[in-house]
Amino acid sequence: MTVSYSTTYSFRDIIRNNIRSFHYAIRATLIASVAIMVLSGCQSTSVDGVTPTSRYATTTEPTGYTSDPNKVAQVRTAMAAQFIRQNELDSAQRQLEKAFSANSRYAPAYDMMGILLQQEGSEINLAKADGFFKRAIELDPQFMQARNNYGVYLSQMGRYNDAIEHFEVAGAALGYEGRIGALENLGRTALKVGNTQLATTAFLRALDGNRNSLIAHIELVDLLIAQNRIPQAQQFYDETVLLTGGEASSPRLLLQGIKLAAARNDLSQRQQLSQQLLSAYPLSDEAKLLKTWIRNPEASWK
Image (tube, rainbow, N blue to C red; front, side):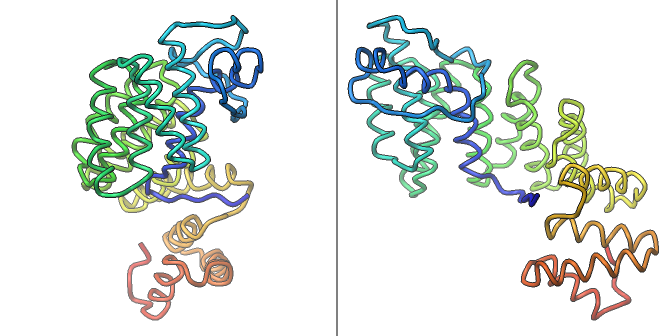
């Protein structure tokens, strides 16, 4: 199994989290009798098969026609999430406008609009996204998904300290299903500002909540190697390899294994992993760094 360990934020991940939160609403639109009566002309498919715990989830039970503005806003926002996932941004925009018309105080619609504008990515829309995320949090300060998404946006805009504030709030919200992801984001953002202590704490907290967090594992290995805590780094590295199917499956993981082998003076393991990295990922940054080390044997392998 091949796993990416990029430290950048993915719009796809953001959208997937939001779609999971609105899973019930999307499923509801598949029930023809309800879809016809509530949202004429809408079409959607179920996503991920995950039952959310979000308080904004809608019921899947057919209830007939409803004029409840909140329920209409819920379903319209769910449809927008699906359109964003399919990169149909204009359709998503129209759904969100209808959500606002139904309920101008529905926080998830503002959060979703922020995501939509962020994904479109133009300078104008990136600037607009800020206000929508802020409005979502203003309407519902306990809406942790909006705080996490706003943190991702702020990090993308280079406003790392502001992002850290929102990630810390979301990461401390027990019961929030995205809490581990918020802690992972907190750790990665802390690294961007050079706060390794905060990053280490965040990743350890993420592992407390989910021992299978690959992001926390891979980041902690690098942090511990930098601190020359080789036995602890080796433990997390071995766990990461097990989580990825029993073998180093990315350039970054291979390079970490090389560093650890060098620290243990295990020449055989170092050579084996070096050959694997150069063969499988010859153009990667990790391979380029390895070649630099090979050309300069006196250089530190950290």
